[in-house]
Image (tube, rainbow, N blue to C red; front, top):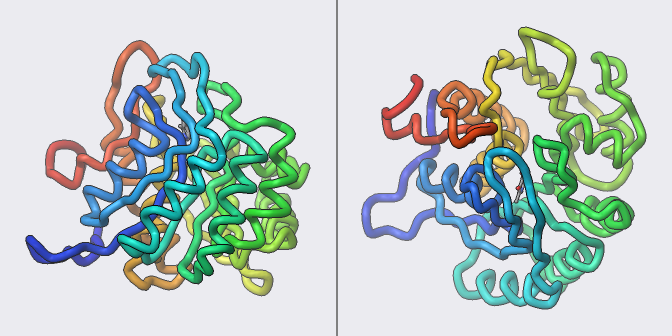
Length: 279
Ligand code: PXL
């Protein structure tokens, strides 16, 4: 696959900001974002929203960072370092979502924002308070360039059970009506053995991104990785369609290179970029 342009050694690379939770197992959340950004040659600034206590088997608990500390991390790095795109992942609570949205507005941000509305781990452990869904819909989605829910998050956010192409379209329409410029309904949880089609919608056109279903139980961090790769491509000036196409190819390769870890589910792996795994 083609990759993103690399800055020469010693030159400042393109930067993104990720606002997300820490995964002590190193496979999802901030760690997934930083792995993908590093392997794509993009510098990732980090605002930690929560510290999860988890391993490959499940999330045992998490500790939320105070909302004003999340906001302060963003306000500290953005004017100093400068970013060309941002993404949000696990935000845990309504007060944190509100703090992120308020800070984004106060800083007058105009760069692309990818909102991955993380609500649960792959083990089914909750990472978002149910009471936070309104804040996500009302405060953050209208600021988003692109939202990237999986089918579980689609159900929570717009109450649509996606089972086929028609319901995937209905979900994309309902998500777009919440205010983001583009909605990507990921098909990773569709009941197909061979395909994992993602659907992108901008309020006018539907664009399908077909993709093979990679048969692996080691898919921890796949959603984070896709959203981080999209943010990295947007930071390079890609349009949303090209950024999503790139991110889909990237996460597919990371799934092919996923490795077993611990006693549970291993992570998707951008290490294939080093020539260590996969293609
Ligand atoms: O993959 C979603 C996700 C995002 N962020 C954190 C996580 C997970 C899944 O476990 O732990 C911190």
